[in-house]
Image (cartoon, rainbow, N blue to C red; front, side, top):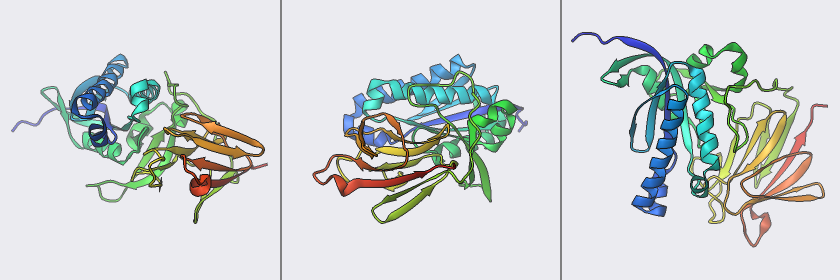
Length: 298
């Protein structure tokens, strides 16, 4: 058999999270319409940024780009548009995305090879609303744009010996999208940190925090099995010099901070000093209480 030529491309692999739950909840036709809308959105954004849609399989879409920057822009815009789409927000529809660059074999408008497989594995490792990027793609990104990528650390990948260096695309707040990959602030001293406690679990976060997710879903960092807790209820994250709580839920969260009580419903708040966060809606509001303290670096 004649060897097929290879081409250097960046691969974006996107997967809709928990689509099986969506079909159970909405029924086949309504769920399919929403899934197709999300896949079409991904394809349109890819083409607008100079990419090519190779195809869709079930709830997954595969796209190729000439540059990693174009793939990063597409991923950011896709997360943002899904956050602002009323139907997708209502049903907590989200994408997890993997991006990798390298040589691919092109045959009859399809792409094959380890570069494609790695992008798919990165998408499988990502959480909802998260884009994981290989070190290969990161090295190809223009140097002044790399601050938009934060190292997650070495991860184990199925089918790969050893650990693989992986980065995360830092996302703007929901409702915004990058039109070019912008520079973020330098990461401050690790003496700036936040501690938190949920029931008997003690947690400590520093500025390398990517996200820490609370919710009913089994893929959350802290699973809380209660009907008033959403599958992805709320998350801690660190962005632009601030520790934040971001709420995605149906029933919302209460934040008691100093003498102020804030009700969050699909919105964010900066966490300062010491306080308490009450998740969901129960007769005993302390049932799902998170105590936290943010310590400045002076």
